[in-house]
Image (cartoon, rainbow, N blue to C red; front, side, top):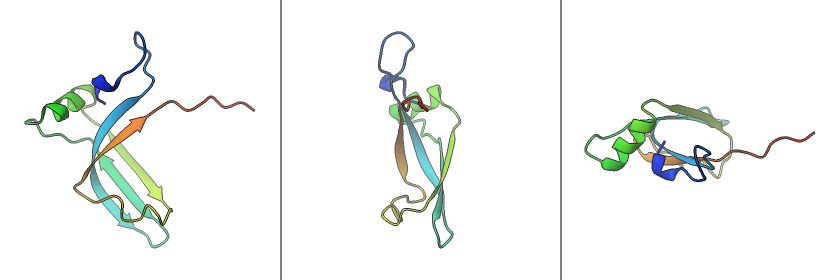
Length: 90
């Protein structure tokens, strides 16, 4: 997670950004499982900043949306922005 992406006052973060590399895309016919891992190149200052904040991370998702099929490519890098969701009210 890139500390430069922190917003807000003090330690209150409104959003954070992670950088991932697509490790695999597995097609099951009814959907694709996508697995992303934190990975960095020590020669790239941006990657060093991300790895300092989050040296290890993994994200995986099963995607059933045909419009997204083919979006993720093994070996490609992606940013993942994380923003808190509104609290549930019942």
